Length: 380
Image 1 (spheres, one colour):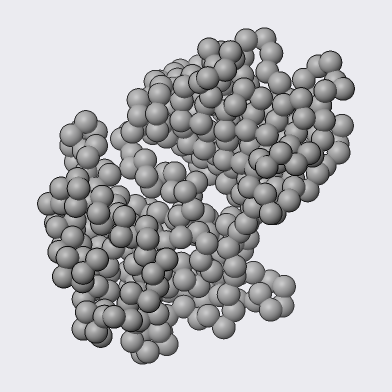
Image 2: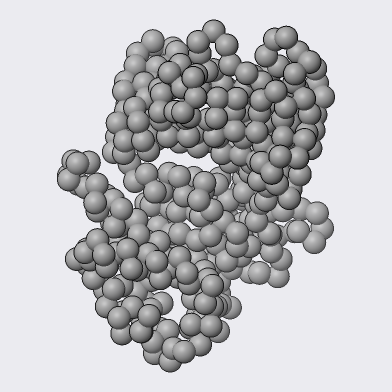
């Protein structure tokens, strides 16, 4: 793509004047960018500064503020793409910052690598299987196998469904295809409990942590409702794609609907609400509510990205702590400042922190990996 045309596309996208085709072209350029890292070498220093300045200003843009979801649906996609283009550029533009800027930026004498495919399969009799990091997921049925068909164990010997749990540690992620064909992606520090086969006209699973569920439609059991017990809430639906976030230390449980329809029920009050695509249910203090949501931001982790859309610093750092298996320490830094940003989860943590530092609202220091400690100090 010619530099002049790229610059034009970035401009119209930031001004929210891009057509669908222009936005798609810009998205395609971004998606192919890492396959062409030499592109920036063609740019002059002035051109690099121009792109960097545009990227930095995008952090401050306010998105998704007013109007009904039906009116905002296109712009929720376009604005998300704008953030993705402008801010994800930071994953390589950070290296173009002036030397004096880097000297006051994240201290990168130490670094932390990203998480990977790591999980443990736990059986009802207490046996555990450390799953291969070279695989991305497992399939559950008469046998439990990796996605490529490699055998892990058999469940055919049992006349009753065998309860089992898939557990991801900090710095781990894994995917499981359940007996009915439902696919579940588990984020770091999460546990999914499920049987080796479903019975009693119900598909029941239990979750602690974060997951993205793509409920199967094609098999006989697809007419049975899927019910996810998560914290003090149950989520029920069929033909659904839904994101669930329910970490034990979180003050609320978030349920984001991508496709289909789900009903949420709060156990404490026995009240319920129904979500439509683009809505997020929130359970806090035993009460249910719902709100329109930027779906792309909620499920970015499943697609391999961090995407922070006006998110509190404390929430951002909790995400990073789980993915990079690190401790977070605040040093006179406000936890409630809000930031925008997007960067690949495959990057070392220093890259992510330097992207966030470009907001000029916060600074970071990485401490201790060489001595076995893993700590990020957050400073103002």
